[in-house]
Length: 288
Image (cartoon, rainbow, N blue to C red; front, side, top):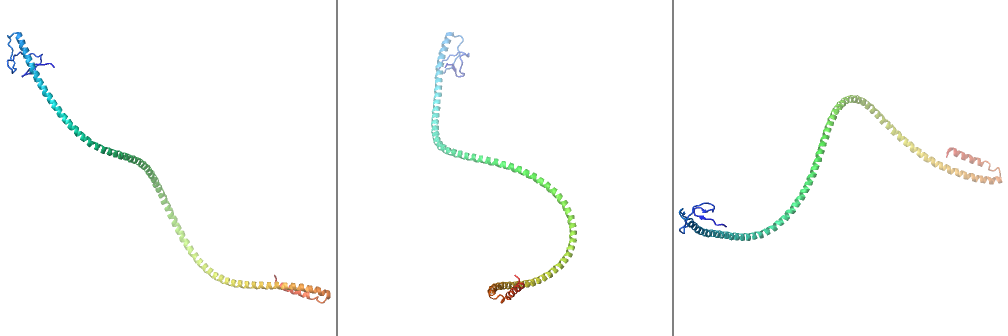
């Protein structure tokens, strides 16, 4: 580093700057101007001496200043080191605390991640549900629009039917009036027919009484006929038995006749015709 001259009033002065020459006679380093009458050699020697003294002083001052600056820097550095050591201790303590907090934060992070995953799943499910709901709402809107259209068509149809109904109602009212008139006429006719029917019903009742009495008589006759038929059946059975007896008798007579014919041909000639006559009479009276 190049040494530069220093003055109390101007400090360090550049060598290139022109300044008046001065001579110091005391230790106060006060500069005095050289007289212009001195020789150049004396001035040069004085300047060299002064320059050497000034350089040495400047070097001392500079060294003291630099030493003070270095001491200040060293003290500052030591203070910074102490501060940094304290900061390191604090950071270690903070690191230990932060380690515990980091574990807690890791657990919280895990729980948060799980919660976030669950939230995302719920969100996805909610999005799916929202999409489904939106689709359902869209379908329901379309259905509502269709129902409104159908309702409008139904209202139009109802109005049309209402008009037709009113027309038909008027026609039916006229028809009902005509029918009422016809019913009144029919009622009168029915009243007269009801009288006739009542008369006929009374006649039928009398006829029923007659029929009932006739039925009772017929039942009596039927019972009598049944009794007579039973009696006829008994007599027919008796006649059959009598016929069998007659046949047996005829057989016996025939046998006897044969026997007597061999003995006396004319002794029993009238017996057989009498028996035959009896058989014919019974057959005519009680036919089979």
